Every structure is written in structure tokens, then in C-alpha cells.
Amino acid sequence: MGKKYIFINSLILFFSLLIFLLISVYTLSDLNSKNTDNMIRNYLSIAESIYDGNNMEEVANKIHSSNPDVRVTFISASDGMVLYDTSSPSSENHLDRYEIKNIGEIAYRFSSTTNIKMCYIAGYDSDSNVYIRLSIPESSITAIVNSFTYYGIAAIIILSTISFTFIYFASKKIVKPLKNEVNKLSKITNLELTYNGDDVVELSSQIESVRRLIDSNIKSIKAESAKLNYIIENMNSGIIIISGNGNIILVNSLALSILNRKKEDLENKSYVYGFVDLKITDQIQKAINEDVKFSTTYTALDKTYAINISSLYANFVMSGKKAGVAIFINDITEQKMLEKVKLDFFANASHELKSPLTSIIGYQQMISEGIINNESEIRDATLKTIKEATRMNQIIIEMLELSKLEMTPNIEKKELSIANACESVLESYEIMIKNKNLEIIKDYSDFNVLINLDDLYHLIKNLIENAIKYNVSNGKIYIIIDSDKKTLSIKDTGIGISNENKNRIFERFYRVDKAKSKELGGTGLGLAIVKHICLNNNLDISVESSINEGSIFTVKFN
Ligand code: ADP
Image 1 (cartoon, helix red, strand yellow):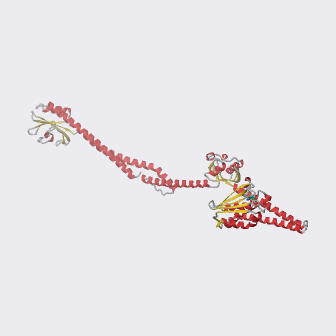
Image 2 (cartoon, helix red, strand yellow; image 1 turned 120 degrees about the horizontal axis):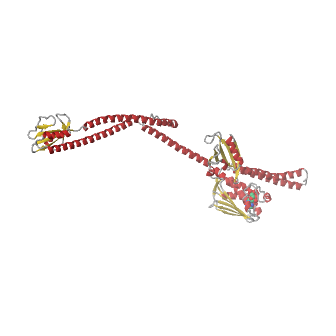
Image 3 (cartoon, protein in one colour; image 1 turned 90 degrees about the vertical axis):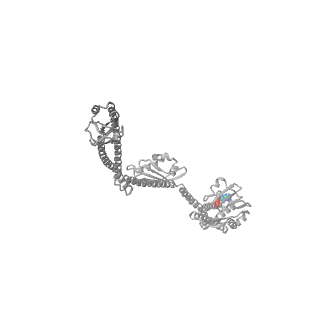
């Protein structure tokens, strides 16, 4: 508390006590006057009642004997001279005295003979033409009151000084621990708090600055934690943090959905509630006991996950010497599937290339070993060799095309007309169409699309080629361009595709009838290329088909 406040406080105390003292003194004095007034009036009425015009001395003695302080004076009303007095009589004329002029009224004044403040009252006896005057010292209480006042003021001064000193030292004692706390806060908060323990206002303003700092720190901690939480919740990995005592202290939503658990089932529970796989729980326990890292896989609901388990030596998770554990779970189903697709692709590609190569080697060996020796057989074997080599070439061209589409999608795009692209494809298949005697029915409501030229050409080429290849002789091909729906449909009246095969025809090297496809020069890669072009250009492709009635492939452009 500041000295100023303690001083003001002591002043207030001083004046309060003083006012109290003054009120007490006034009340006492007033009471005293009233008592004196009553007393002197009583004596006057007694004196008047016993005065018979001649017994001045008797009256005076009676009154004086009952109260020696009362002075009784008889004054002649004709000349104002004192006729009888219980004290030494004055020779002055008393007729001008207030109490003589105002019979029955009280007068206070200092006596010229005693020099004491006296209370006077007088009565008049008309029979004897005499005034009976009584006087009495104001009272001995006055002296008490006076000394009460003096001692009171002294006591007030002493009390105020004691109070000032007490409050001063007490406040010092009270604020000392506050000062220490403020100094500690100063160190923690790096704020320049220079509280010297003298002023409460200063202390409160310093506490206010610390409060504001703490407030803003709490806000930024909350913002940081919200940010961290957002990142953790939106990561592509499942995250689980386990403390050194084996309890899960953090688990994000992705980890919960992978483990198919609710937050309340895992949070603050032992890690064994999270994993049923003994290999994983063993690895977690090892990571708690020693500094290790494990990578393992976990399969659930047709999905494969990579699980990385590692010891975490951070204060917020350690329990004594036991480390916490950080677990990251990543969905690698697609990666695994791609690996499988690649392996299948290599196996299929080798197989596809092996059979024409075996035929070529076979024919050439027969010629070189003279097994085939006449000209027409050699010609026949050579033609077959060329056919197989062409097939191999076609497979390799389409494989390269597919891998090119996978590696680097064509980015050079132009506004192209669908009808123009269809016309140019039809032109290149003119002979095949004639050979099969197919009728082409065009229903063009043309529109432009922003697409790469090669992509658009290969897309339409593969669909039209299949519509020709898998059509019946004298069949029909409908080419429908719908500018409203932004679709291109290629419909044939061919052999059709069964429902179960419909889902697989877009796979690489998949053919419904391998022998027929081979005979028609198919590679099993055409629709895989179509699917890839659609994927790269964000297009939808759908197929409807009925066995022996035909198929309709529809591409929806954006
Ligand atoms: P392919 O080179 O064998 O034609 P594709 O990838 O183009 O390879 O087609 C895969 C398979 O889908 C074909 O082998 C064929 O069995 C079937 N198919 C494709 N288009 C049609 C169609 N229009 N009518 C019937 N079957 C088709």
C-alpha cells in the first residue's frame, strides 16, 4: 500500500475520532447545562417557598447547607444593593444584571468576584420588594469535559500515529510475498516488472499487464493447438501416440477408422485395445523398452496398411525411463494393387510376346533345317512369320502407347470437333468396313471439346475398330454425337459382351475370346488405352451390351 494511502487513511481515522470526541463533548456539555439549569431552578423554587420576607439568613443557610456550591443573594429591588449574600457581598448595583432584568431566565457568565463561570437565576418577592438570586458554578463536569477533551485529542493523535505505523508495517508485510510473486512473474513472462512494494495501484497495473500477456499467450496456445489438431486430423496418415506407461494419449480420426474403433474406446486406454495383432503389440512394447523402429503391414477389410512404429523420447510421453511410441499408419492398398498390376502386366506382356515369337522361331527353324523345303510351303511359313511379327509389333506399339499415357499425359490440348475426328477414323477403316459390308449410321449433333488430338483420335479409333471387329457381317454401326448431353456413343450390332466380362474388358490384355481376338489382330490393350485416355482427361466411359445383340460404348465429355 502506498504511504500516501496509509497517510490519508490515518487522517480519516484522526478526523473521525475528533468528530466523535467533539460530539461527545458537546452532548456532555449540553447535558451538564440542562442539569445545572434544573438544579438551580429547583433551589430557587425551594428558596421562594420558604422565604417569608424576613428570614433571608435562614433561607440562605438552608439552601447553602444542602449544596455549599449554591450562592444565595438577596437584592433590594429599590436600589439594587445586596441585602444578604452567602459569599462576600458586592457593593455594586445589581439591577442591571441579566437575571434580575429577566426574572426566571438562566444566565451564564463569569463571576466578577470568583472569576468562575456561573449559572444565575433570580426570583422576585413582591411583598418585600426583594430579589432572590441564586448562582452556582456551571458544574464540576465542565472541568471533566475539558480534561476529557484534552486527553481525548492526545489519545486520538497517539491512536492515529499507532494506526499509521501499524498499517504501514502490516502493508509492507502483506505486499512482500506479492512483490516476490511479481518478480517471479517478471522472470517467467520476460516483462519488465519493477514493483518496489510501495504502491498497490502499481502492483495491480503490473498484475494487469501479466494477465493480458497470459491471456494473449493462452489465445495463441489455443490457436496453435487448433492448428495442430487440424493438421493431425487432416493428415493422410493415421497417427497414434502412446505414452511410456502404455496408454494411448493421441489418436486421430483416420487411425480410428482404420482400426474400426471409437475415440473413447482408445483414448487414455492401453494400446492393447487398439491392436489385436500380437506381432504389432510386441513391437510397441519393444519400442517402449528400447530405442527401436519397426515397419510392418496390417490388413483389414480388404485394405493393406503400412505401420511404422518408433520409440519417442519426448518429455510429454515418457514415463520414467520408458519411451513413448509414435505409430504412423498409411493406406498402401493402391500402391500394392499397382505393384500387382505391374507384375501382372509384365507376366502378360511376356506371355503375349512369347507365343508369336515361338511361332516365328518354329517356322524359321523348319525352313533352316529343311523340314519345309518346297517353295509354296516356304512362302506360306514366311507369310505366317510376317503375321506373327506384325502382331508382336502391334503389341509393342500399344504397350508403348499405354506406358506413354501412364507416364506423361498429353497436355497439349485444342478445341476439336468430335465429328471430324470420327470421320477421319472411319476413313482409315474404310476397307475393313467394306470387307464386312457394314452400314455406318451417323447421327451427328456435333460439338467441340478441349482435348489432345492424339488422345481423341486413339479414343475413337479403338472404339470404332472394336465395333467393326466384333460386329457380324452385314451389321450396322451407329455413331451418335449428342451436343446437348456432350456424349459420343458407338453402337454395334455385334456379338455383345456378357455382364461379368463387362467389368473386365478395360483390363490390360483381357479378352473375352482370346482366340477370336487374336484372329482379328487384337492385342487386348485397346480398351485399356481408352480407359487411360478417359482417366487423363476426366471423361466418363460406360458400356451397355447384350450377347448377340450388340454393344454401345458411350463417352461423356465435360
Ligand atoms: P482387343 O485388342 O482384343 O480388341 P480390347 O481391349 O480393345 O482388346 O478389348 C478387350 C476385349 O473386349 C476384346 O477382346 C473383346 O472380347 C471385348 N470387346 C471390346 N469391344 C467389343 C465390342 N464392341 N463387342 C464385343 N466385344 C468387345
